[in-house]
Image (tube, helix red, strand yellow):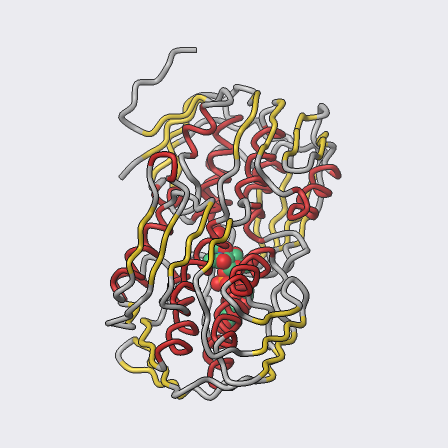
Amino acid sequence: MDKFVIRGGNPLLGTIKVSGAKNSALPCMAAAILTEEEVILENIPQVQDIETERKLLTSMGAEVELGYGRAQHRTSIRCALLSDPVAKYEIVKTMRASSLVLGPLVARTGMARVAMPGGCAIGGRPIDLHIKGLEAMGAKITQEHGYLEARADRLKGAHIVFDKITVTGTEDLLMAAALADGESLFENCAREPEVTDLAALLNAMGAQIEGAGTSTIRIKGVAKLHGARHRINPDRIEAGTFLIAGAITGGDLNVDCCNPEHLGAVISKLEECGVKLEIGADNIRVHSGGNLKAADVTTEEYPGFPTDMQAQFMALLTQAEGTSVVTENIFENRFMHVSELNRMGANISVSGRTATIRGGAKLQSAAVMCSDLRASAALVLAALVADGESILDRVYHMDRGYERLEEKLRGVGAQIRRMGEVFGKK
Ligand code: EPZ
């Protein structure tokens, strides 16, 4: 298993580019199931989860071409014939977002068989709201041998009020409603930019969706959707991770090809900590304004502070003067990074969904274990300021959602390598 070796202490300087958003690309690739025509997606990140989605769609009979060379961030998908509308456990167990094919499959073919996603490091993460919504649209859903089977001659429009705000739940049912018979009204929807991005693609495919990005969405179902070309949003979580990399190393970093509008809560929290930011149209320059100040963070649904930035921000707060309190409201078990950060000399205590960070810690290098995608990013950030050389194990977690992370960071002065590569002397 690959490891990262990181020598801390270098301020990051220069320009670092943000890739397309993994959490937009996955639902947009699943949306191609809704038409037999070609869907072309641009700005697709080259990360492991995209490769898994390609395998998933191909296993059902789709033709998926991931670009290379100059077209390396373009993907062409054609689901002319879905010979085997089954999302197999072997694939689903590696990526929960596979359940995003449930709605599109039953809407397009009248039948879907999807392995139930098991537990996850950060929480139980049930998909009961996906199921409840599809049943409200008339699907008959049974569960057998770890698989969900959904059947419907044609889904019907429905009025759905989500019991809880769910990102992929909103996306899954949006795709189902696009081909349903009649009008749907969704309330208490997720407002994440990834939902808006998916709706933009679906409307380009001929859907009639209004209100995406707000908590109330109206969908007029249509009989057929056609092909389209769509550019995926930049990854706001990757951009946020780089902003913290610039701030925590005391560097001067230009985070380029991002959308600052999607980072409102992260930007204001960084400024509260005393970080200097210059906001451009599609870039943000971050340069630390001297000592970092403590701040309290509470994760919320968008436009609140994103749970996918919680771990990275905690790494920053270990370097701030004073005590900060971080409250995780979205997932019940998203503090796996705490014990690893404490192994590096941080001073963090956890009680239920609250972590208390006593800042000003001088971090030391250590061998640490990555546990999930964002926790891993927090360990990279901590290692960038730690004294000495840290070894991060199981970096495959990071490869799922960060494109060529070590190359990008090395490009702005970080001393990071994937185990096995020659390491340049200081
Ligand atoms: C999406 O997951 C993202 N994944 C996650 O990013 C992100 O953390 C999460 O939204 C919250 O922002 C993708 O977009 C692929 P939810 P999702 O449904 O949709 C509960 C990353 O790091 N819930 O909004 O699975 C659930 O347990 C990943 O890139 C139900 O109870 O999250 C959670 O507590 C990690 N029943 C809450 O709702 C349901 O049917 C929010 O989950 C669905 C969700």
